[in-house]
Image (tube, rainbow, N blue to C red; front, side, top):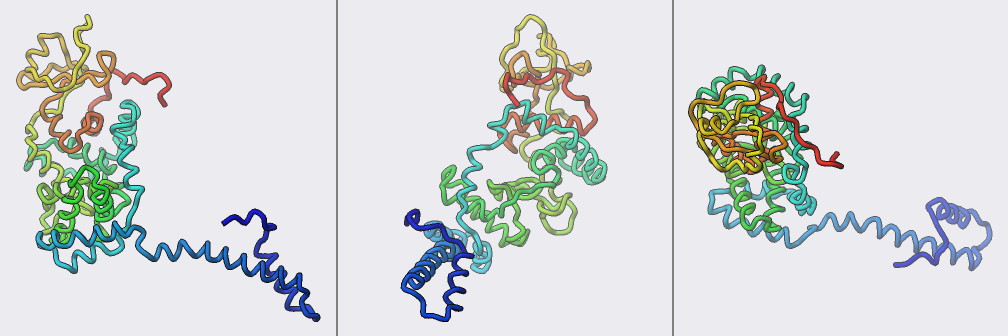
Amino acid sequence: MDFTHLAPINGSSFSRACREAQKSPAPCSLWQLVRLFSLLGLASVLAIAFLAPARAHAEPANPGFEAFLQSLWPQAHKMGVARATFDEAMQGVSYDPSIMEHTRKQSEFVTPLPVYLAKAVSQNRIDKGRAKAEAFAPQLAHFQQQYGVNSSIVLGVWGMETNFGGYVGDKNAIDALANLAYARYRGDYFRKELLIALKILQQGHVQAPDMKASWAGAMGQTQFMPSSFLTYAVDGDGDGHKDIWNNVPDALASTANFLHRHHWGAGESWGYEVILPSGGGFVHGDGKQYRSFADWSRAGLRRADGNPLPASGRAALLLPQGAEGPAFLTTPNFKVIKSYNNSTAYALGVCLLADRIAGRPPLKTPWRVAVGAR
């Protein structure tokens, strides 16, 4: 509706007109009545406009979304979820279009690598990781012995995922998963994860309001998807619960178990920074072509820290920025880390952070920063 043809009006002029009409000893003139009723009419229109959003909020914001949520009940029931658990989980779940916006700006895929890694391996994060290593030294030593995964790598994952528990996400897992499932993002994947999340609630590992997660539904300090929780979460402190949200030993043990179950090679590093031989023989390295360390040594590659390459084992050459940037020989353990998040940038963040937490020096070769990059 267009009100541009009317004179400007505000609350004070409306109140003043009412007072004048009330204290006037004489009957109102026709003009006064017209003006007063005009003010009253416009005020009613404005009140309706302001109140309309509140009324709309009280109704389902997206009837299709509400119907979708209720359509999940038969499948949830078949998985052993009680009606009371289902209803409690769905209470307050609402349509949130902002969640889909996150799918278009995942930092490990859109941020320039040097910028991404500078944040991932910041001095603040290194210092925090070393403090956590000291605070949980007995538990980390136990989990390293039990699962065969380097404790520094477990810390690297913890640091990359949630900054050592500092930020586990601002969403509720049911909310996030429901919105992604409704949008059919990645097909039926998030629908299945949502149903598994309901099963986790039924098992009593966490209460629905405490099921903190990222926008993608990755939960707790380890950022496990619900299916990963069911498969890999463990009780790290023996209290009978698997609490990756608030219990640090549970979160650390679950991360170690995840990597162990994905075939982490016990006693083996993730890889090494190397110096390429002069002559420009190596230009590309995608981290997929494995050769023995002995072969790489014969080809002229040497460790950047001056130590010899391992006498046994195999590795693949990784050149994230070509021959002019840092070069790495990565073992199959590097692929294991990518099973956590299938991004080379993420895996490098975990590994380089782990190395710094363990006291190893920074990279010898600096990252190339593109012209104009910030």
